[in-house]
Amino acid sequence: MEEKDLQKQEEYTFTAGPKVYHFTARRFKMLVSVALAGVICMVGALGYMGYNFYQFRQERADFLVYQSKKGELEAQLQSLLEDNEKMLRDMSEITTLETKLRRALIRDTDSAKLGSDLGPQTENAATNTPRYLGQGGPANLGVKEMAAVLTAQNKNMEQQIDEKKTSMSELLSELEGRNNKRSIFPDLWPTKGGTISSPYGGRSGPIGGGYDWHPGVDIAVDFGEPVYASAMGTVEVAGWNGGYGRYVRIDHGNGYETAYGHMSGLAVASGQSVRKGEIIGFVGSSGYSTGPHVHFEVFVDGQNVDPMYMLKIGQKLNK
View 1 (cartoon, one colour):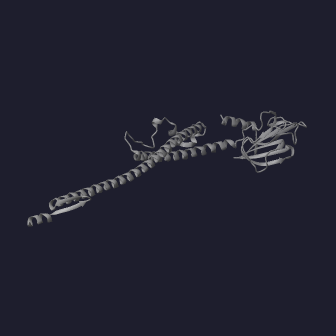
View 2 (cartoon, rainbow, N blue to C red; view 1 turned 90 degrees about the vertical axis):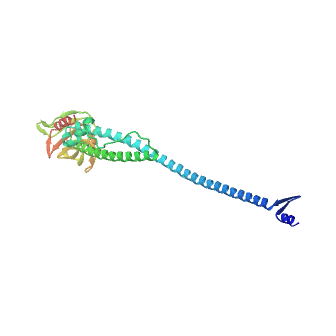
View 3 (cartoon, rainbow, N blue to C red; view 1 turned 45 degrees about the horizontal axis):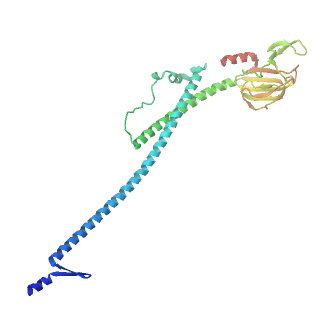
């Protein structure tokens, strides 16, 4: 009787609807242990899945950052490539222009004034010592490495372009200086065509006869034809001047002056700067004149000289 009661006390009864379940204490403990183990496994699995999900999100964020930075690097690389190509084109054009300038200066009769700077630049490239000792070789470069290489190349080319610009500026200054010297030399014929109706020097007076000293040349041209400045300079006189009629006198600097007379009209005023070949007036017959022509005089250090002599010197210089 006591044993039956003890067995009943060690049993556990569970009711689920119409069904009743009886478990011994040992079996109940086993079921509880299995349930706890299941819960622990489930919690572990959920933790593992949560950790993996967290890792996935972190890796995805890192991947998005990498993609973003990669895009920026690729855009930077493309920009560097475009700059590199543009600078290469500019470098080629500048080098070509510099070579043409140097050749133009060397052909000039005064090229010796430039000194030794012109010599090495125009010799065969094999005899020249390069300024930049470039190095390189085959290599598999990533985006970052390639960007670094292009940055170094672009910096190097910028320096070379700046040096070329400085060199060209010096060459242009030299060329402009020489052109200015030629621009102030009075060797331009002051009309389009025409005939010398009276040369420089002694002659018979055009109206009264007798000996007459003619300080210039008379160029017979049709009435109203333009008269051009024989050289660059500043207008000293522009107006009526006695027997010269309508008259212009120009100071060209370096002791050179020119004068133009008998014009029908003037196109410049006193104090005005004129370029070589600029229209200063129009052919006429004002003043002491027998017909339409322009009287042309040249002065060197205040003394009259034969304009034809100056024109011949100009032709030799321009060859």
